[in-house]
Image (cartoon, rainbow, N blue to C red; front, side, top):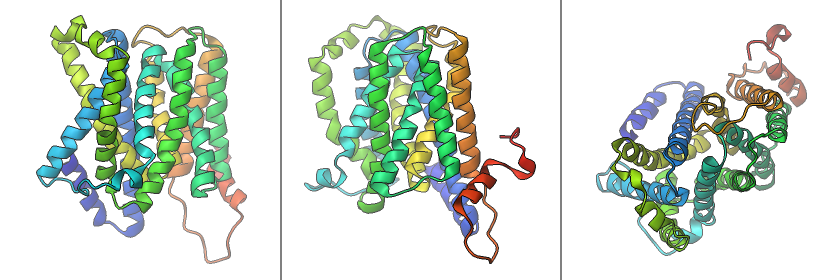
Length: 347
């Protein structure tokens, strides 16, 4: 996978500067979207369909897979990142704590909620990311971005108001995950720009520093014993999907860093929610825990429309400006929101 991505990036280097930049933005976003979609479906299957008793043990497996894969890849010379030193923890803090909490609470929400409602509630992370980007990175969203974000969040709120399978614990897990996702995206962007660590180093040391605390917490919670006594280990289909979930944890972490590096924290967050278009409808059949209602369905579709609008606004290739002066920012946003002829049915 790493070799394939290296070829992809070398191919991009043969393009012109603007074409290569656009290619890297689009390819990294698509890669992250596919990775996020696959791991959500696999996690839901393991935790709900197979009734695996512990999302904490699953998150422990994902941390272990990231450490092993990156350690072996570095030994083989496939990737490079700094050797361990005493100041590494200080340089990347608080990313390891955010990384672990995001993984654990995200898996907890996946286990407790139906996929359609999980997807809807996760969109609240978008607004939080936009606010944190403004506070931490001084990135001001355009009018077009604001309109699409508020459409997504408003639709998600409407869907949550009529959730017939309400689960307070699941809601708490998802809202904590939303806050951690926003913090992770913004601080990941900041560390990639300032720390001499690289994306592989951030992935490796985030997992390495958190593996022992995660193991101790999982053991104290009694989940190690519950997972050991689980009767499904003899099922080869379950074992394969459990292993796939662990490996996909590493791939997802890589895709998040790659997308954040070539785009922005807000784009990474919204691409993660955009993949929920497929997850939402597939989730009505996976797990068997979704309860349909009209208000819920309408809210979900409004949120999906906002996701599509943001994707169009963000990744549409902007026409080069003429040699006149600088134009009005709001007027530029309106042009992006309304394609030629004022038609929006193609969004």
